[in-house]
Amino acid sequence: MAQTMITVRGNLGANPDFLPAKTAEDGTLMQAKLSATVYENRRVRLADGTWQDDPRGPLKTTIQLFGRTAETAHRLDMRQGDPVVAGGSLAEPAAFVSPKDGELAARTVITASWLSFDSIRLQQRKDNEGQRAVQPQGTEPAAPAGDASPDYVDEPAF
Image 1 (cartoon, helix red, strand yellow):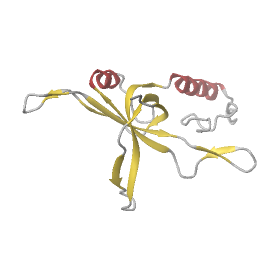
Image 2: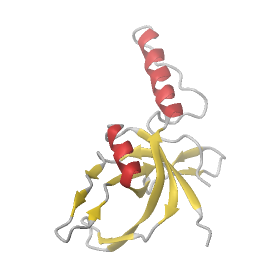
Image 3: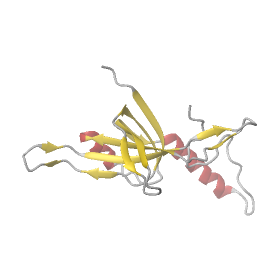
Image 4: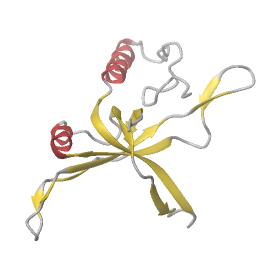
């Protein structure tokens, strides 16, 4: 049976959780696990043809990695807010009771084959910081075309 691969691009909502490999009481080896939440910006097209951030907020996806892949991703020392890209297959969704309103909710979960920094967005941030550093005082730097915010994906999600 073929697995459908999915890719998520966004920012880490919190520092990833890492559980190192260990031996259980019954002698079985439990592999390492890394879990992270990625916030993916959603964009909506307005009646005038322009794009804006979706008022419902970002789409939150849980990424989980196991074994050596989890250990390798843990060594990258990713932190909350870092732009990342992950790819893998869909897992069972996480169901929970929302702490805000007590309603039942669910989140997409991906068992990832890989998780890495989004080097394109890291470079965009660096370029934007460089532009701000060379701007004369009292002037605002011009944002690159289509760049709504350096912390979010600036393309529409289809």
